[in-house]
Length: 160
Image (tube, rainbow, N blue to C red; front, side, top):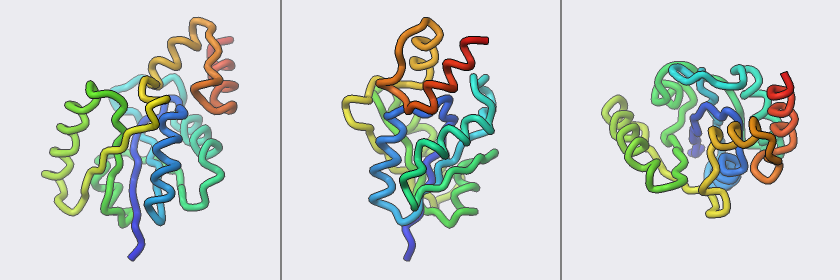
């Protein structure tokens, strides 16, 4: 049986914390779908195409990781991909309440999909895409937090 998992998010932008979770997922699952959300209520800095492209470049070393955009319910997307697991990242205890609510809602929507929580390496536990954008906007060096392709894209955004 092929072990397939989905890792959903807006990834605006992808950080080393996201990539740490993806790296570990790639060793646990035969196939990983990184599902870049169409943002919904959020107002992302990057377009959907830019977010998919940045993530695709960032995970290019993993043969079993595939990046796609998706819209709608993550449990429906998981079923389309024959996945039984949705992975959610937890950085801090403050993430838990929201993620727990979402996991229980997803279970109610589809009992065949399990949610698994993964924590990034503690050296990335404080990182968030929101924080990265804020410090970049203020002129800080973000290269310790995101891949080089993301550094370039953010630099382009804030020069405008």
